[in-house]
Image 1 (tube, helix red, strand yellow):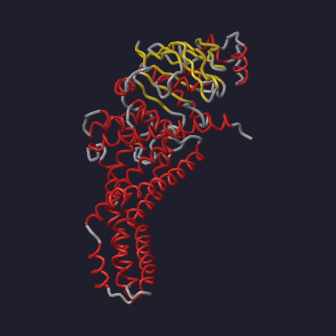
Image 2 (cartoon, one colour):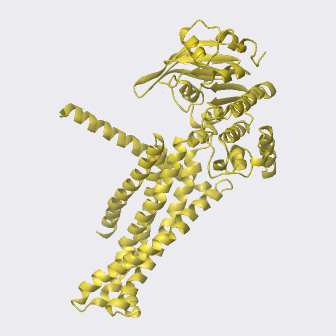
Length: 262
Length: 255
């Protein structure tokens, strides 16, 4: 059995490690943000464009499927309940408000954290253990400018755009279920949806998406840079990047909603 | 040029370097040898501040690099090129782009000039046909040569080599050794080489330093090194079938 002193010491060292890691991630993020003005300079624009393509275009297929079915499930679940009261026409507003305020940025965040975030952690992790990061430092190339900044720009730009795409497909999925399963015409569904969703809902949702983009970049890059112990370490960094991003996205999603709606 | 003054470094609670002091003069090739875990690569990484000592001072051209700010450190690092054990090439870039990277990042010169300089280094290292290939499509020896081309593209004063011949076949290893010797003879580059391979060390080194359990047990020119009275050195020499009366007495590459 562990003595209380040893447990306390262990807890203390974990808190210190957490503070150290947070400090490192924040410094990395601030430095990358400082270099964002060079995102489209001659030496960085190719990498920035490549990252935007990877984040945005290459994620479209999975986002299409997830967004469409999220809207369809939302419409079906709420529609079946509303039909008991003869109010199924309100599925338009239920789906639109849920998607724009919460589900759009949340689902996009989770998909991007799982696909793009894990890829970032794995790539930077592999570069760390194969000494490519050390080689950049020896060449006096700042890894935060060379690697983190283009990914930060890509995620800040693409996350809100992908969220808009998720919202549209989710709402269309809901309309499809409304029209085929619940007897709500597309026109009635859309009228109801536009009546209740506000501009504020859209802006807050997009703000969330941008924040989630920053979180995914910071966590994934940081985990990549902290990788040790070869292939096992890369696997561990990738898993941690996804889990930590998921947790922060959940907590921040609540905090932002609380800030803007209460 | 490079001076270590009482450098101590511990990793994971174990002392890897224990108050070591030595100097590397301009134009010489210092080879650091020793068993695995002796602190060879750690020593190399201190020269370019990829690691910081727990105590002691690392001096480059008479200036301590321990407390240099980021921009001053970048200036100091421009004096160095480094060939990593794994070559450390960026996998998503072609050979040409890997070699051109330091030029594109630090020099305001035309793309035409960059291509010219890259072609000249690739030619020097017998890689003229490999420019458009990607690192994953190259053999280990070719990757090392590309790594060397990248290390010298900015014409550094000092080149550090971390296990330049590890994992290579004997023929390719000797070719890399020849290149290191040529760097010194033709370009006057100061080199520090970390290796396990004593045959290689005796061929390329103008001085050989052996680390054992974090301490320097020998630091001498090759002809003196093979006659060392130190038991650790003797056992290391014998483990690689090198004897005082062997061919190395007369087969040393340098004068």
